[in-house]
Image 1 (cartoon, rainbow, N blue to C red):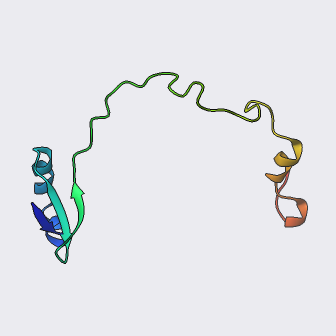
Image 2: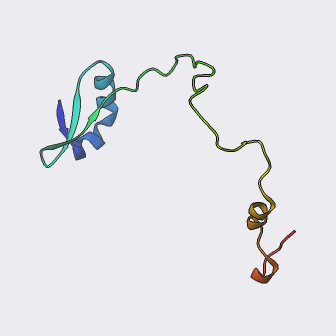
Length: 85
């Protein structure tokens, strides 16, 4: 089914059940297709722990504390009229 954007806004609550039942709904503007309504895929699958093991490489130790000069850059200096530690 093709439906104009204005009509789709007013009939959205009727279009959703149509899409969920398998009907293809394409929203158009000035007769040209813009988007297709599709149901969201079921996201209830289980996640596999360790899926990225060996795929991510750090060039530095991510648990190592940051250098002092980088930490200092997070704080405003006294000459900026700000509160500083």
